[in-house]
Image (cartoon, rainbow, N blue to C red):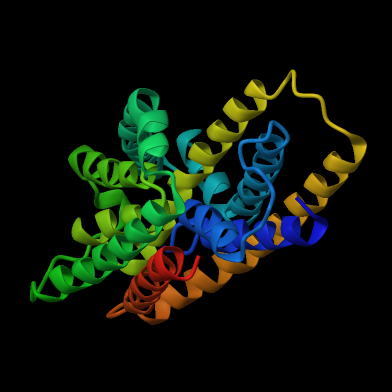
Length: 282
């Protein structure tokens, strides 16, 4: 992978990991469309991906530091008993929402990605990701007087539903953030609350995946030049992810009625265009 390609992948990871448009789908489709020559199965590609995810994780920690600090202070009881119970409940919801992905990922992740990890499959799932976003907005708008809930009002059952939606992201092209936000919206959250819960869920998930992949690569020999490129890419990914998170949280607060629609249109258009290009232009 050239330095230019590494920068493009870093920007792509930092933006699409949080936007509801599937970072994995774009990472699979873009190199095929652009005919990049690097081999994603090369042993040096895994450390590069680990560094990109580490950058994204750091960005989420920086942006939501006040949220995590408030939750920890609440759990410790420094804000009173009511806040303590509420903080314990939110931590419990985050744990419960993560369990389905841990189970499904442990059992089927490699199978799903080996079966559907081609650029053509990712383009199809990217199109389906757009349909999911559009259908969620339609279902949400078709229920007049729908109860609006805050994160603390969610139940364990709601968390399981959102966690099951997260499992869709094991198909390259279906967005983790998009799926979890759809789950949150269908359980009564506003777009900004659904996004906040999704991003809080993402922090431990991305960090755990980074640690797991880092453990796998402990015996991989790396050249100093490769690590230099990976470190720069991680910084670029972190900066891009931080900007993306700030933009998205403001965007979801100000466009609650139709916030997913532009992303849905993009995914359907990009997925269809990529599939046609891969089948008829290559």
